[in-house]
Amino acid sequence: MIRSLFLLLFLVSCASGVTTRGGKKSYVYDGEREYDSSALRDLAPKIVSSTFRDPPVGTLAELFSPPRPGIKRLGIGIFETRIQPTYEGLAGDDAVYLTPAGKQLLTENFLTIWEESLHSLAPELDLVPTESLRRFPSYGTYGMRQEDFVLTSRSVLAPDDIFFLEKGRKTTTAVTLNPRESRDLSFLLVPGYELMAGPKWSEHNKHFLNDLSKEAKLDAVIVALSDVSWTRAHTDKHSGEVYPEELKLRIRASVLVPLHAYHTRLGLVGKKETPNVTLCYRSYEAKLRLPIDLSADESQKTFQTIEDRLLRRMFKSYKDLAQLTILRIQSDLDKTH
Image (cartoon, rainbow, N blue to C red; front, top):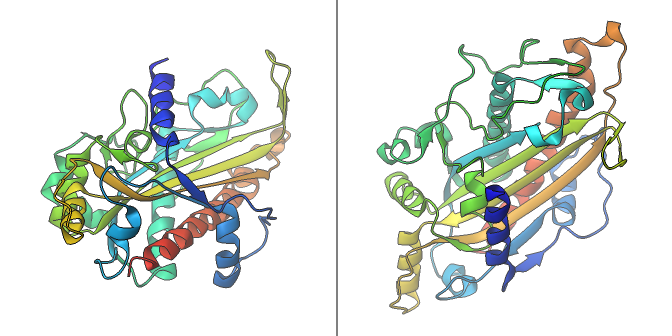
């Protein structure tokens, strides 16, 4: 109930004056195709929406258009995931069960995809690695330290992390997970992203973003939330609705400008007001739904089957979706230079 109330308030706060571009054209995504950078750039505006809303003082156009300073130096300040969360159903319908350690490893792999893709697709942007951001004093001041479920130094999923489980156990209640050594800024299981990002100005954790940006000399901070879930074909026993066997991916990301940088830009355009909020330059959303095959007889219920039928398709499609989102971010940030 509390979670639903927060989300309702969030949607209401973002509904007024929002402009959305892209993400609505028809497209065909091929999960087996290896897309080159040219194909990704063509596909990006069809799959990924770019959303913005003018701040309480000034407009984004006047604050971020040349000759104002461009947004070039960035860091991924918050990277959250919801992977097979409890409310997606029981392991009996999901077929493949993922432990908290498995979720954390997937989160770290997804973050690696983002950082490597930003370096390769947008080399003109100066990305400060998350590992470096964690060393700044302000990083450890806000939120809570993320619980570490992976007690050894490894990055690859093992059979103990993800396996077939027919029935009887719910997926873990740890629905919001960050990479190891990260800060947990969620509230009552509502991810920090849903409270502080999106096409709006925000009070939530504004001092964390402001202090971290000052120490790391960042022009803006990228925050991201990834939703990943899968299910085998089944009929809901309550509603009678038939669910196909599929993998669902959703990425939301926002480029947030800290309040001190917002104030500086207001001064450059001759405005004396200094709203004490974080400013969202752009917000992005992309979704994919892909058919998968999780039905297996007893002899096939192995880690190798999970790798072949789920993990490879998941990582490949997630990488494509992340790179499409990054290309939209790059395109919008190029307009500030």
